[in-house]
Length: 364
Image (cartoon, rainbow, N blue to C red; front, side, top):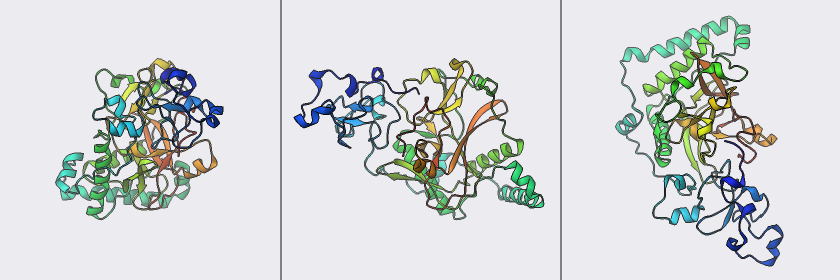
């Protein structure tokens, strides 16, 4: 997750003269290679050169953008689309420009995809009662509400057909990216074990999620297990790729989702091309730092976009806060609404890593 360097992939800055394409003399003032998208030859250290056709593209001109220069071979969208076969490393760099195949809007298929659990009718009434009790306590002591800032569970769409549409949109995105659904952190042999996830190792300490908020998070996960889905739609944008929109009004402090995926040591992922890794544990001994890798197992968090932290316009888009908490001694990362969100509004969060770990100046 470190900054891009020439050594990690060949870019225009370190390109042998014999392999540079010929260009008109008027273009030689910037080294002879220009970005096919913007026409500029500036930012040489971020100008990728296709291993198939030698054309150049800035990492921030790609859609979706790349946060860093990828390791290994890289192929432009045209060459990647023309290739009959590709390795998993190459497929990570393919930019999807066509509308993905939609997941069938069939209840049985969606239930199987997300492993939805059936529940008795009596259990279905429990969450609303819990919410009513919380609202009554909150109105009884308004000052306490302002001080505590308790997290809220999401409110599912009332229409069951609409919930199926929301789930199908996520299934479409996961299928198109070759991932399977998971709503929890996963620990895979050969990567970081669960015993490595210790919040006590966080440099400077980690805030503990209050018991009531932890119960709210558990409630959200139970609702999802039973088909009560958060009101979110994954949509495909030709510029931003897969992105997420609110499908109904969402209140400030609502839990959107937990950021999940395979947990691995940061040292194992320093040259990873993935653009969705998230800091989980920033340990005092860096060798024990952990990241979340959602490329194989993930939920809707993977498709929510980060903001450009370097501009007022980028920060103005932010409507989610990315926060890390300790729960039962383990680190967890939550995406929480930091203001009211209108229906149809796209979701953007602030990345929780330091800027030197994960640059955001080319984010949308």
